[in-house]
Amino acid sequence: MARLERQITVAAVVLPFLGFIVALWLLWGGAVTGLDLAILAVMYALVGFGVTIGFHRLFTHRSFQAKPWLRGTLAILGSMSVQGAVIHWVADHRKHHTFTDEEGDPHSPHTHGAPGWRGVLSGLWHSHMGWLFDGEHSSARRFAPDLRKDPLMRKIDKLFPVWALLGLAIPAVAGFILSGFEPIAALTAFVWAGLVRVFLLHHATWSVNSICHMYGKRPFETDDESRNNWAVALVSLGEGWHHSHHAFPTSARHGLQRRQYDPSYQLIKLFARLGWAWDVKEPKPEQLEAKRVENVRAEQAATPEAEPATQERELVGAGDRS
Image (cartoon, rainbow, N blue to C red):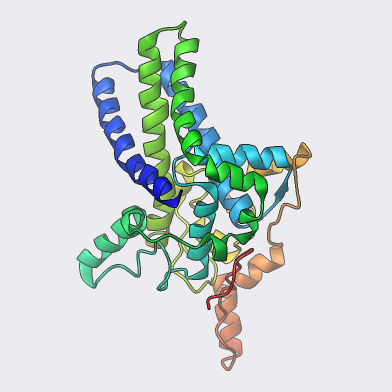
């Protein structure tokens, strides 16, 4: 299963890119409609939230609890992103938090580069998508034992190829029906809301791994190279507030400062109001203040003998570094 999953994931890097090239050709020729773009937007949001809310904030960090039907729905939607099956996605990300920007991190730009601009480019390539071709596979037994014990997650994980194909078929069927049963509409919807959507969402997610560990702001004290990047946050539904996430990894809210738009968190709060989710975690104001860089440095200056503050790397359901 792991080998098949990896083959599908690698194929998903190439095929959506080819679809993107075809889409540019269609765009140049005017062969795109408002219906194509509407289906693209809906699929991008649904599948994107499956990754950001489901794969990341719920399953990886358990930043809130949810009803079984919502857990299953989010796991299936996230699987349609074709970024890997749910259990292995979670294992990879928990491993990233265990070894952030150190040896063992699956996709750090700071462990696969060399001095100078070539090293920067090499590190960015590895963290963005090169790590997918390394052939390494994070141990689900070590990093996701809780999901391996969950019958629902095991079943959804096993059916990953089905969800990947379904995520491409739904746009085509929607385009066909909503256009009044026009075959060409099914084809263009498949290209735009299927292949192009996978391409765009892939690179939005991968930009969190690469750009958000190289470029952006660091308002909190952490012992890694994570950054907050507003542009990445915009296309990744709030995931670009990545430094804040590393400072408070179990927080359901990543946009922790004013004017940091985080639609994934807003949707989690809506789920909570509807009674579908509960135990939504986020740091208290005093915790935020205690971890701000200026406050930590002021405290260190006042007490020079104290050890520098470091980030507690919280890894839910996984072992230690040994």
